[in-house]
Image (cartoon, rainbow, N blue to C red; front, top):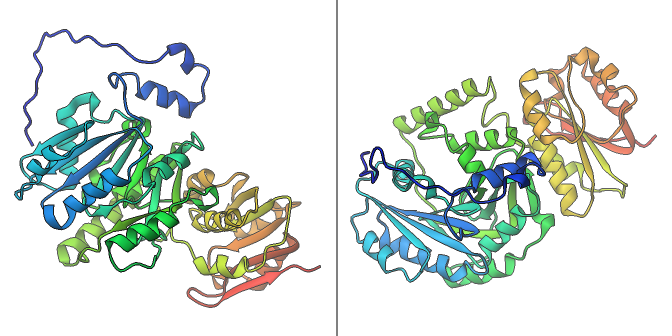
Length: 432
């Protein structure tokens, strides 16, 4: 996509970096990235850059979404980037009429998809496209609610290691969906306002996030924005894995709800081929990790195992063959949600391809051993919960496997798993 570029060869461009270089030496890696990424963002940068993109749907989506964005984005200093991605229904004129001083409008003349629209706008702006310390992407089919951005920023600023934060919604996947009682727009905003009370116990760390709407550190976005191999599918999965492997945490804010309009389900041979192709590209890039199978959590394990939680000074959890660790985080989030901290995570796996991602999840040891070495590896160690990630029937001598797990439970500790794939969940407790 061609754009008019406003520069002249041989021209001298004056640049004044912001910030003190001496401050960088005093900080950890996460804060260093923040400082350097914001060296040249112009004067008086906002806290957040909110990026809103639209392609037609002016009357049935865009106007309502912008109205909500202006009304409910309060108590946060933000600039608004508006991208008209080739609309033909008056969207550009509407953007011009929006009564917000800190707005920038980009008109992409031809629609070639949302990602192409974003790239075209970004490239035309040069280095000052994202000026905020954080950047939020709001799709045209999302309606924000009271304190949505304030809550996401509160979570983000609680830990310099948090890289991306997302809210929950009525229409999404990845365990980010919740159901609130409403039947129209006014009721939705009322129940959302009652729901959107910032509460750290409702912040959940996870392996991957679906950015129905998202808040990211701009420094991280500038460090790694996207892999064009995932032009159509799995870009969210790729970002999640990349950011985690850089040491950042991904958070779901269950204290913040936004409305996502239900769209039509994509089907057809071309779409299925795109999915298969993207999934295979992901497996090759991440050396055998599957973006779905290896990040899936089994919610029933936690529901049954944590039906009763005794008071302890700390809760230690071991995941055996737990793949990338989704269930470990799910257990940790469940314990944190009812006030039990600290929670310490460990893992023992046979397949080495999971080792790196488990390092991003666990606070304590991550072992990679064959089944015959399990007992020796865990010698002298006990855990309050042990999660078996693979069906018990997959192991040689299943009874011996259960006995080994029992030997490494603390008194009153519980172990859980499934005997067969999709079979009944078992929960066993050590009482002596």
